[in-house]
Amino acid sequence: MDIFLFIFIIIIGIISFIFNRNILFPAHILITSYAVASFMLIIILKNVESDISYITFLLTILFLVIFTFFCHLGNNFGERLFFLDKSTKYSIKFIHVNNKKIIFLIAFQLLSLSLFILKFDSMLGHLNSATLTIFRLSNHYGNSFYSMPSWINFMCNISLISSFLSMYVLINNYFYNHKINKKGILLIINSLMGVSFSLVNSSRYTIFVFIIYTLCLYLFFCKITYSSKFLSSIFLSFVSFFTLISFNMLGNIIGRTNGLSNSATYYFGGGMALFDSYLKDPFPTYSLIFGNYTFSTFYKGLSKIGIGNFHTQTSLPFKSINGVSIGNVYSGLFSYYVDFGIAGIVVIAIIVGFLYGLLFNYISSIVFIKKNKNIKIVIYFYLSYTLVLFTFSETFINTFLSFGLYVNIYIMYALYKFFFNELEVKQY
Image (tube, rainbow, N blue to C red):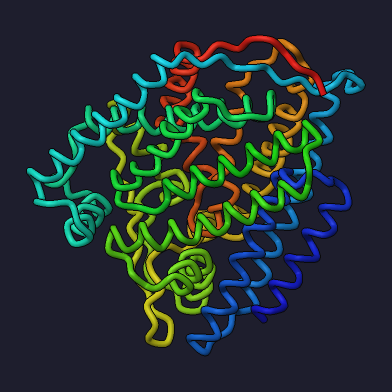
């Protein structure tokens, strides 16, 4: 049954691609993510001598079909809502970079990372895989004894956002003048320093978000500037290789040493495997409040700002399948199914699919406008990770209803306006 799931996902992808040939179309990204995850699932289930249930197969296909259909519907609706004369050429703005400001951002990142390491050392001793494991688990289970001061976390967050902005400016300017100058080198340094902030939460999640964002931006500019597909393929191969290597290296640093192939396989396919395991053998779930798992981030945000005192239970048990430990992340569908049943999966697929189709059409349209704001493109692709990592955990609702997201967007606007200046426009 797991092989049939993979085949059906590929078929859905082919049909979707017939109606929209843009590789960055949201449904295509989600389907690709599911195709990769289902392939990893085949490997996992072969290792544990198991197979998925019919209900897992049906729920996965149901979600993908509904999401894809309404994503196309939202895109078509957007063509009428954001109607523009698309006989106009694409436009790219050159973004001026001030050396002193970029050096300031690099220094700020170094300061943030240094303060983090110093505070970490005072709490847990030298930073190594063992102490990082303790730090990660204590934060995961809400142990405030080993938590960082909020001001250090805020500095680290600003540093990471500056890395995202620098990568956007780097890619934008590269496609504008097809070269990387000394300012481009500074942007590369500031961008890559953001990878180090994966240590802040002892997770590989951050580095994946950054890599997904970079890849989507590059492919986006390849599309609007009619760049070589061969070069795009080379870049895609390089990013894929870099992802696997960095995944394993960071795993060794934070104490997750499964080996390169096993680590990637269980990370990407484990969510689907555990969701299937739950459907076969449900364990008690504690929905303390409406939409406990689906809206947990929203409830926590309300509690932080003093609106109510909501208690959510989101920690899930570590699970093994036939004696092989898989983890404790049960994919995005788990939250919807536990909170609302099959009806919840259908309704959320409709809403989120339509929303993403609409947003995609809007972003595709603004590149025709000379007065567009580039920061909108940054924000959209900053959110692209929600499509890729949904097979791992619930990323749609908990992201869009997160207060932290809108704080980050505000910081993006502020940093972009202060550090970068949009200049002349080149049309394609």
